[in-house]
Length: 255
Length: 265
Image (cartoon, rainbow over all chains, first blue to last red; front, side):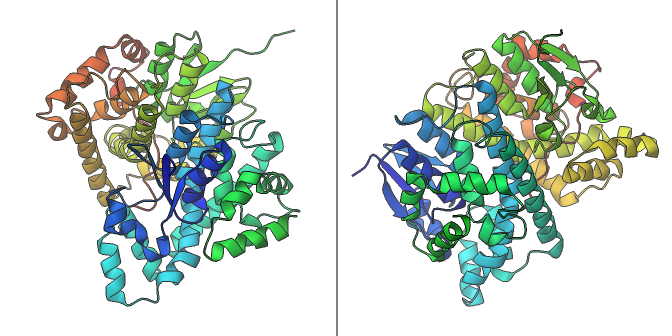
């Protein structure tokens, strides 16, 4: 039994971040697949681990850690293996800036569009009473609001439009950034790449109008470089749902 | 031939993010030039020699300090504090134990995501609205045109036109009250600082909470731990030195449009 247990969903967005960071560091971990579409993260057994009901969560010895980016930073500091942050203080600043930009500004827009188009429709066919009961047991009020919108298709056109604006702008800014350096914020592969990659790896499939070899050559070169890392390939074998099929499509598109 | 330009920290009045950056700089002992700018006059958009403006244009933090290094704008007060700490070779502002570091990071992130937008919402509508409302239309539009971020520009317009969302205002008051409770709870075991030694978490929490101690007095009342910690933090030489940079009578009331309130609620 490994000293680390990770509760995660698909190797995607927030769940994908600590999975990939652990793989890159070579840290063995016990995987606890927590199916977001079955609402495993709001069941009592998971709430006993993370009372906030968010995934991922990691147990290291007696310690319980939550929030994907902060878990990655812990993984990089607490374990041996290749450094996932550069030495230079300004490079470190730049990587932190990009991670916050993704976590707090661009990422929520990606997820709003994703929840509206995919997650909501995937859970919506259950009886209304069952959906209401599922919402009632979500601990965080903001998550309750988000799930309600996704389940019942209540995102307004205004907020979806704003999310589309942010996604388009964010892709432009990332394209510009990756024209300056081979990796996000620095010359070496880091937590910044792991963070951004987990929310952008499927852009050529999900947003072909915005990201493609012609429109965003810097992003595509970077995606290809990251796709082929052994740790990414290994992490993606842990996917179970339809997303696993998406990874194959993405690779076909990029190669 | 002129040599490379030296870094300059441009900052607003010492409240919120500018207070964090200034105090962290003084904690680090780094010798940098600091220049005071008037954020509500749009002077952040008139900083000379910015060749890489990305972080200035798209900072999630809103109107915060800017460190200019070789043309690159470096923003976001928590990360500036980490930069100063690391550039100084470790000034003790970040816990060395990875788990305590994780705790501090989580605290700072929750402060940035929940307390800072709440504090900025209450602070700007209470202290900055009059000035923006009184500004000549042409002057306001001149500033607005320079704000690259459309969502930040909208927060400026909301403030000038006094478009207060009453639900957000109430929610902001509740978040401030929650943070007062959290600090009190965190200090309940008699510790001096939030996470062992004095850290960025103390600075960040102080910078966003202290300005509301009078206007949200009920949330601060009867909390001895919080009250003693606020006094301890305010007495720290780095914080005193930061507050001494003020050009106005009450720098803790000098708010400018800050981070947005989470779009998911």
